[in-house]
Amino acid sequence: MRSVYGAGVVKGISERMPLSELFGKTREFIVGSGGGINVAGLVAGQPEIPGRVCREDLQKGFVSYYGAISRIVRGFGRKFGLNCDVNSAPNCVNINYLMDVLENKRKLDDGEIKSCPVPIMMKLFDVEKRRLRYQDIREDPFKVIKKGVSIVPYYTSDSCEVDGDALVPLDINYLLEKRQTRDRIVIVLNYAPERKAKHSLKSWLERMVAEEVFPGIGKVIAEKDARFMENVRRIESAGRENILFVYPDKSDPTRSRTTDPKKLRISYEMGRRDAKRIVEFVRNGEN
Image 1 (cartoon, rainbow, N blue to C red):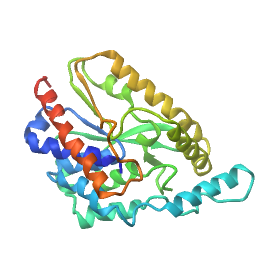
Image 2 (image 1 turned 60 degrees about the horizontal axis):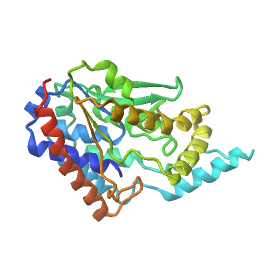
Image 3 (image 1 turned 90 degrees about the vertical axis):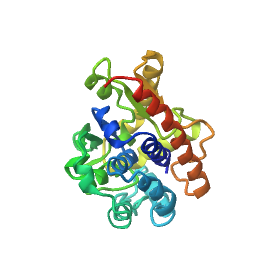
Image 4 (image 1 turned 90 degrees about the horizontal axis):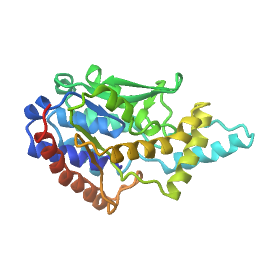
């Protein structure tokens, strides 16, 4: 549920800056995973939806601990030569339920998303070709969002394209290659850029299970943390005044599996607060 921080950010931006002004100062939104839902809510004029989905709708029916344990056990079994089918194990997250909430319960306005004057590029990873691709959410909002939140190895998707942010977080090369020197770049992370021992264990388990789902993808997961931290260092050491790096502070209580409404609210309010920095940064620059 870490994207609740970003949901707070888009809500805070909407409270401080009209969409017409935001669109006039933005060349492109580049999003990944839950960030696609957050920005979709913002441009649709429904910035409250992403936060409500995280805080109210995903407490039950979305995360399956049985699915997680089943996939890990089967992954171990495959690793040691047993005939265990990881693909047939229950998914750890119910993406179909999430999409139903967005389309039918919260009624995210895909018409408004399609009419947004600014591209909304979702980061996708093609598991067959082992490469990133960016697709404009405006082409088919719910279809592209669904691909973008299908997380390997937690969810086995019918599509060969899945959440690119989970596999290649912070694709700084794409950002820097596309932007002009004077463009201002705002990077929003839903977690502090640090990696602890328990995160390394989590990555190892993800790599083991993912390799059984999509043979060969384990290498991508094995390298993602080192690549992520390298890009963080590149950004922070560059000292470029036209890049703003925003993420929750260390008191953020939300983790990927957090469902406690009180903790989610704290993270959400952090995002709303930090949106002030973004608005000030954007307004002080030139597009």
